[in-house]
Image (cartoon, rainbow, N blue to C red; front, side, top):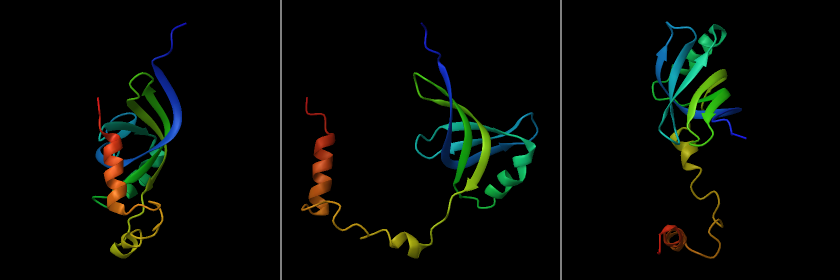
Length: 128
C-alpha cells in the first residue's frame, strides 16, 4: 500500500504577509512563515478580503493564518492553506516585552543562566 504524498489537516501558520494577489481566482497572498522562512500560498474567498486587508494595516505586523493546510507528507513542506480565518498577532509595547525578563527565575534550577546555556550548547554538539 502506497502512502499518499499529500496530506491535509487544519492548523495555523504564523508569519508576515509577503505579497497579495487579488486579481486571480481564488485570491491569495503569500505568507512568509516565521519558523521556516518559507513562502506559503494562502488562498481565500472574497468574504475574507476585508480581514486580509485589515491584517495588512501594520506594515511589519505578523498574522495568524488558520485553515486547511495541504503539505507534503515526506518533506513536511506546506504547499498551501485554504484560509478560514486570519488574525493580526498582538504587538507588544516595550514595557510589555520587558515584563518577560525575570518572569521565571527558577527555570534553570540550581544553575546560573550562563551555566544553563553552556550545558544546552554542549548537549547540542556532535561529539562523534
